[in-house]
Image (cartoon, rainbow, N blue to C red; front, side, top):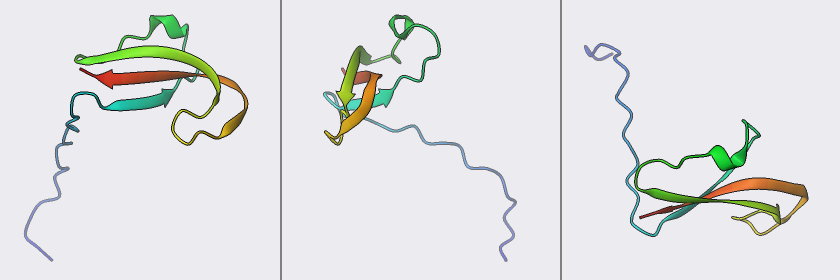
Length: 70
């Protein structure tokens, strides 16, 4: 056992290179048009039945938020 106290470590923020694209599913928390991306990101909403990462067909169309780092 170590003598360290069990303090939770601060969470390290991820650092993304400019041009990085990430996709997140919109789970219906209100209108997708009300989404505001984090600072330094640009976002679009896409209604699609194809998974934006894997390219697989989905059983139905769903909204995705596609964010690009500036």
